[in-house]
Image (tube, rainbow, N blue to C red; front, side):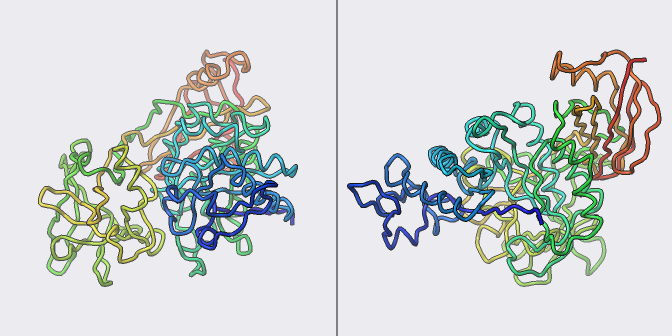
Length: 508
């Protein structure tokens, strides 16, 4: 069927092999190396410490172990290797990344080498590994939740601005920041290995927004659904010829600053932060307006003001009837019903992607050590762990009852309109308008600014005047012609939606 064979493996060596002190295949002559000789027990995988330990790749035994693995993968005919828990802010293991890179080259078999983090990565980290791999994940797991899609915009912008899209890669090729899978089509819930199965939770507009951003950022496109049960709409989405051309062949890809929008609303983003950094957010319970109705869990942030001028907003969560009673996000709801347990303890549950709860465990190290706001990997499968219980304190904090030191906080992301641009191999301009806001908005950009941004990025490589310009082309998603327009490119973009244009422009 033309498909490739890929495997997903973990860094290092298994604790099972270490506990049995298994011999290392291919040990150099003169010494019998074992698993306990090469295992670094002080460096377990942060999110699976009971299973995997780093390997001491400075030893001959450690190198022999890594080489034996990749020789075996090559003998199986593997085309793609995703190496997990080896990259990013919690699990950066540059020595093992480098050793695996050399081992893959030494097999003589072409294999795509992909790195994956536990939480997230920064452009500075990308610059350490781009020449060692073909692609590297720069975010935590991406699921079919709008907040996950939205969190990728700043990440994609920053890696593009750092010049890492298509930078030097393994063996002189290119390397690509990876925004993670496309959770489209027929899926399970996070952590559900056997189902139940369901259709993606993203709306059609949100699906187009996701694949358009991924294409404009030239992220590897990896389909996350079940190919055996793909529907025609999803198939059309992932095989769109313009999307694939942008992803494969465009250049000069970048977000253009200062997009103009008629609705530059404040956009609240839920994050986990060190509690001492959460002073701008105050949480409270607002009583229900009618007897028998749910109370509301609300927040107050000075930077975010609603239309009435009040500084209080309610989360889009409502009460669960399960025990223990929890807060959960309900798709389509406009306000939140909430019930706080005795002593103010509750679970926070998201219904957008199944039975998953707000969890302080995954981001603990990064958030506390760096005092940074983290916008992804906030949820995991619901359990009775303390990391998933939260307490409303007398100071208005929504605080984890674990020892993580994390509190829930609201950030205000003011710029809800985003514009990306790129050039095509036939001289066309690709322009994508995005609306991250909660209602339709008119987004626009002067054409001379669009062209100037591309000329500044690539200098003499690009032709074309920066003077007033007229353009014509197609609206990619509607497959309709744009007609001829001059001066300003403008479009009304639906909430969470996008407009994508392929334009041919010339001077007036």
